[in-house]
Length: 498
Image (cartoon, rainbow, N blue to C red; front, side, top):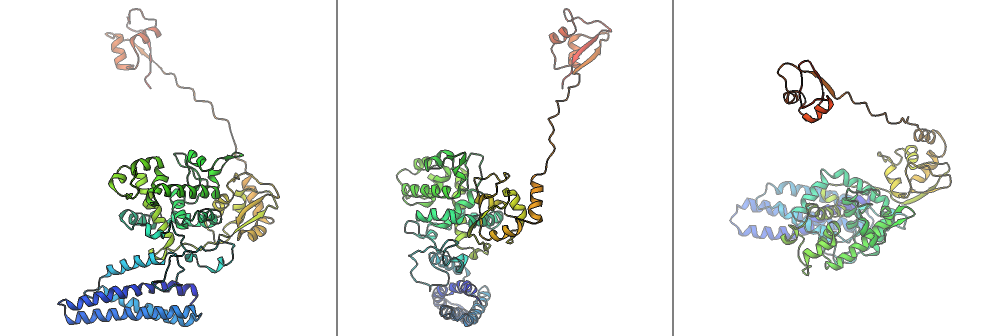
C-alpha cells in the first residue's frame, strides 16, 4: 500500500477516534434504560469493535510515520474491516444512532482544515496554516492533491465560516449532480491557471478554496467568459469595478481577461469588503455579486447580521441569494472532495513555454497536439487561457513564445514541428470557405388584385368582402373614381392584405 493510499485510508478510520467518545456516552446511557439485556450486549460489542478500530488507527498512523508502509497497510486493512463490520451492524442494533456518525464526521472535517492529511492525531493543534508549493517549486511533486493546506481567513479556518445549512446543502447537491461536469471543468482549468492566480490570493492571505469557489461559479475557469451584463474574465469583473482595481485596456487588451491581474483585483476587492463587513464572508460575497453599495445600505451598521436574516435575504435578488451558498459549496468541495464521493482528476499544472519553430495559431497547435496527456477534450481551452492576449485563429510567427503546461513542451517538439500533424493542422486552418454576396431581396409579388363589379355592388361592400385593409379614398384614387361610384362590369384594382 502506498503512502497516499495509507493516509487516505487513515482519513476514513480517523472518524473512529471521535466516534468512540460519543459512542461511549451512548452506551452508558443505554445501560440505564429499560432495554433487553441482549440489545445492551450487542450495542456494547459494537462499540468495542469501534474502539478496537480506533486503536488500530493509532497503530497504523505510527507505522506510517516510521516508514513501515507494509505493516501499516495490514493494520489498516484490519481496522477498516472492523469499521465496516461495525457500520453494517449499527443499522440493525437498537440504540445505535447513525446520525451521530454524520455530526462527528462534519466536526472532524473542520478539524482537518489547515493540516496535512494523515499527518496529525485527532486533537492536535491545527491553527498554524502552511501553504503547499506551487507547481514547479521544490516538493510539489511529492504532495498529493488533497494535501494542500488551507490558508486562514482573518484568523478563522474557512470551514468555520461555512454554515452547513439548507441553501449550502442544496448547492452541494447541484455541484455533485447537474453541475458536476462544470465543477470538473472548472477544477481542470484552475489547475493550469493556479500558478498565475493563487499567488495573488496568497499575498492577501486569502484561502485558495475561496478563489476556486468564485472561479467555478463565475466562469468555470474560462478566461474569456463574458456575461450578458458585461462582466468579463475568469472572475467576471464589471468594467467600472475593474477600473477601480487597476483592470484597464492595455494596447487594446482588456486586462479583465488576464488571469493574474483578475485574481489580484479580486483578492484586493475581497480584502477591502471583508474590512467593510467586519470579516463577514457571506456579506462580502453578496457584495461582489450584487454590488457593495446595495449591501452597505441593507446591512447598515450591523455587520454581525446574518446573510440569511430576512431583513437582508428577502431584499436580495434570487441570483445573489443563490450565488453566496453556491460559491461556498464549491469551496467546501475543493477542501473535502473524498467526503462527498467526489474525485477530482490529478492535473500536472506545472507551467512551461514553447518557442514556435514554425508559424502556427492556437487552433493549429490544438489539432497537432491532439489528446496527448489524456486530455480527451483537447488543449484549446488551456492554451487559450494561458495566452489570453492572442487571437486563437491568428497565426503566430516563428520565434513567438507561447505559455503552455510543461508536459506539452516535449509533445510540441515531437508532434507540431515536423511530420503529418502540423501539415494537417495548417491545411484545415487555411481551408477556404466560399463567400458569395448576399442575394438581392426577392421582388414582392404584385400586391394588387382585380375585381369585376357586379350588379348591386357598392364600393364599401366590395372593400368589406375583398380588401378590408384599404380605405375607400385609397381605392377611389387608384381607380379614378368620382364620388365613390362604381358601375357594373368595371374592373377595380384592390390592394391585397398580406
